[in-house]
Image 1 (cartoon, chains in turn cyan, brown):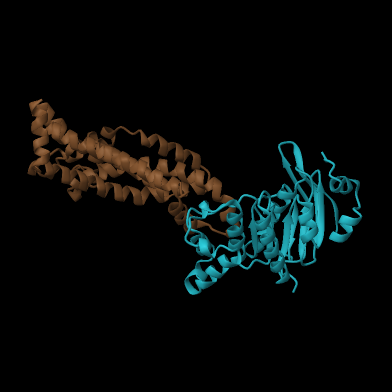
Image 2 (image 1 turned 45 degrees about the vertical axis):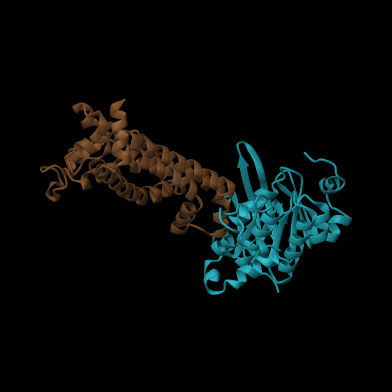
Length: 236
Length: 231
């Protein structure tokens, strides 16, 4: 079932910080459902592009449309999981109840089920900030999924997590994608990208260097920059 | 030394005059604190999370009002409530209500400015997440107040400390009338000027104990919050 926020069209996006162009004429069309992984070296503009898509940053120039509507109009159909999850100073269960107050009133069992889906049912009454890093990220993902988003953005959501947490988050992302949510994920982890990606957007120097299906990108990258990146050479 | 011993005798024997003054002091300051908290916490939070032209000036004024001399507050409230003032018809001058009004004026900027700083820090941390979750307006203000509850408790206690120890404003608008508007600080000032150090010392000891209690509460709240990762 295709996501209803497709196609995502980004045209001529431009963003400067100081006198440096951190996003330079970025144009992109994402119209396939599934998981899109944005890859590239540090400073390539991956996170900035994701934040522009979510409306957290307003670009200097350019346009973003999601299913022919602007970012603001689609905001309540998006969710984002950040690299460093920010959880409220409440229990794990109260964090979910805050994200979905109606659900908490009408069907509270669904919140427990959501916690169980990220293996945190036994931590429901524990202060969220006392959970481990991996548990906090899983809770942040459960919180994001509670709103049943059409578009889920993940910004290096598994960076510095233990392998078990990474695999659990990946399996949740895959099943969410299978149920029709469009996933756009920023990752530095090549093996993770190989496991998850249906298509890859490769960025370098604030520009989109390449966009191709995952199989093709990993077997025959089309640009020298992508080849160098996959070979582990540092790109500046 | 004998005055000190006599002062402790007054406290231990629950002297009626002493406890009448103590009760009025607590009543005035706690009511003032409750009113000030209801005004200042949402105000401080709103100023922390909204952006409008002149916001920084408002915060500047709020911070400046923190250091407002109590006698000036007393004078302003006196002018407001005096017979020829705009609220003179209410007949509130030299009543505990006038003292409550003065204390509210005095501590509202203190709690608002302190809570503004607390919420400002929390806002920097929560901004992206709240934006992503679509949390705005009244819901955001309530969420910030709930999540900063322990830090805000210390702001409120700071306001209470200022209110209970205040003398300049309440003596102007309350008049230090025996059995009506005499509170601990004004009584201490009066009894000392009369040379009656016994009651002054007893009240001073109670005031000091209250100050210690408030500070102990602040530390306990901070430690509890830090232990639960709620700080």
